[in-house]
Amino acid sequence: MHLIFDHLNPKSIGSTLLLIALLNVSTAWAQIKPFRFAQLTDIHLSPGSNAPTEALQKSVDQINKTEGIDFVLVTGDLTDQGDSKTIAKVKEILDHLKMPYHVCLGNHETTWSESGCTAYSQIFGPEYYAFDFGGVHFLFFNTGPLLKMAYGHVSPYVINWAKKDLEAHQDMPAIVVTHYPLTEGDVDNWYDVTDALRKPGNVRLFIGGHYHALRNLNYDGLPGILMRSNLPDNEKKSGYGIYEVNNKEIKAYVQRVGEDKKLVKTYTMERADYDPNGKAGKYPDYSVNQEYPEVEEVWTTQVGSAVYSSPSVEKGRIYVGDDEGHVQAFSLKDGKKLWDFKAGHRVIGGPTVSKGIVVFGSADKNIYGVTATDGKLLWKVQATGPVLGSVTIDKGIAYIGASDSTFRAINIRTGQVVWAYRGLRGYVMTRPLVTKDKVIFGAWDNTLYCLSKTDGRELWKWTGGMTRMHFSPAQVWPVTKGDRVFIVDPQRAMTAININTGETIWRTYQSKVRESLGMSKDGERLYAKTMQDSIVCYSSSSDTPRQLWATHVDIGYEHAPCMLPEKDGIVYGSTNDGVSFALEGKTGRLLWKHKNGNSLMNTVVPLGKKQILFTNTEGTLGLLKFN
Image (cartoon, rainbow, N blue to C red; front, side):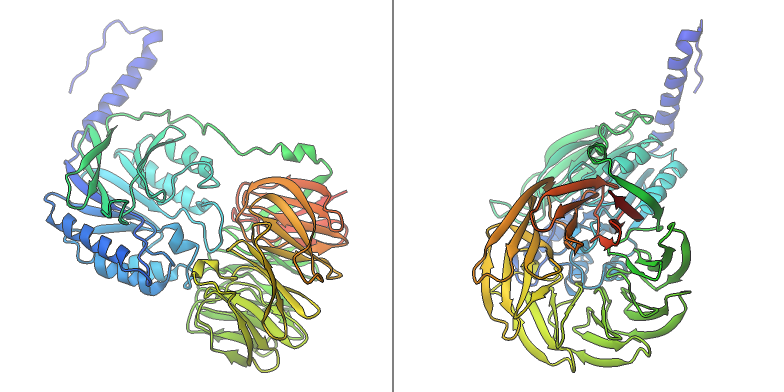
């Protein structure tokens, strides 16, 4: 193609060069071979229901009978409970497709997963990847969250990978495939994603699911579409999406089984409908830090990957586990990294240190003991399933649950298993409560277990009449006073249970708490975080639920499981959008709030001299102090 431009002047040079660029892009993209693909999303296969299975089978059958479908995108929430057996069943059905298919994770595979998401990788492949078809580049990546109720989150290393991948394919239009939409209230670091992925200028569409409904969205200027769920709709019809792609446009259709497809929207392929040099329309608001200037960051450091658990501290050293399987030690004084131990897969429950030994579990199916001074391996106990639970160490014995139906007590010096209880029906993630003679913990099977500390005998089990796995008391760290043990659970209830018999003393839905709980040092007060703005305090000695105070902290909708530790009369909490806060334990008076990021803050660790340690899913470790 020959282009001639006459009478150029300085004012027209910029627009002329832009025109040349657009024409060159259109010329290159004119080589796109027209193709069609289908999209299945929000399948929610469940062991307890036949309807999702039948709906998926009907959609697969119809896609196979539709001429010209080149491949299928499957955009998350394959299952309802994230269990390995059901994920494998989804693959079994999808394998009946006559054309290739490509899958990404949904929040039901990441929030609930007895394998720590390792089963997904084993069954379907990587959590983020790319492929080309017909001259178009497709990117897939996980939008989380991982194993905790929180907003979605895209790990920084995945954002960097996606940005570099798009830059390496600037000569091709790109379609980005996720489960969550990249919007505020869905993904906590949406702005990092949109800022990074807009710059190459070749993204033409984001495709996702999650809402179970059709949505035409705008991700800071980048076009996005969410497709309807494959589950039967109000007219008991399953459905999916169909996309037709050529060098000029992408046409998106909704397709109900047994009906003709209907056009939803047409998206351009010829040019970017956004400014590649632009910025997100909104960023997180850190003005709260100006309201409480008495709080300051002593230091912060980047761990390297997302962190899903609290740090552990002993003798001036901090220990942290992360999403890539690293357990690292840092100096409490300045945050400097001291050593790094690499497990075979992600560390969810985090490390616990006692008497110079650091103990932790990994999704690689092992429990490790390493030296606190230099991270040298002392021993390793092999389980038959991923180990996602947090560790409690008491008198030289580590107590930890796993995903192999087993809860173990391990001598931290030798690595010898003192006893193992094998009666679990679900996997364990929580930090167990260890008393003088009992070990108490919840699992993702609606059950709170009480075992003998001496030999692991089952003393009692409590279910509270719950039938849905999602209501399990599996994230809360139980607390105790006298003859009572207390929990909160996702059914929005706080419960007092007789610690000797497992009988319910009282149970209340009054405050709509969820999975965040704490107790005062004297054992007289229970603290809990509600799902809307407030911290509540209840009496631990009353025979009926008795609220002592409630404080509106103005933290918004809250569903993240973060415990509420008390030290020196101050109770601390944290949120799913990067805020930590402190209140007077006796009165509930708000002392301060501070924002360290925009992602899930794990349970903070109070130190002496009005200092707290924090970690978050952005991979930040830090020390705060306040006057």
